[in-house]
Image (cartoon, rainbow, N blue to C red; front, side):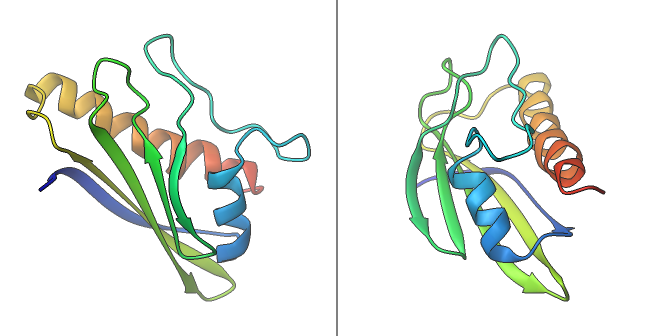
Length: 119
């Protein structure tokens, strides 16, 4: 069973199907760039998806291969609510590393992805 390391829900200005597309194909040529990875991060693989409600990524961090990021997307007005949940079947990282992982998820989704939609 996986342990939850962090989770947060925020609204996005785009509708669910657009956010789902952004999460399943972040590097598509027509997309605005938003997935800016750091030197210690790798491109995630989509492990599961259910359009337009759910996406599961592999870990962004090669030193934490058992981590998974699950995105739950639901309609919210003209846009959507996007929840990310970081889980692991490995041991939890120390508090400093855990803070960094949570910060990166918030930054990528609630800053970079949101900005890519013009907000």
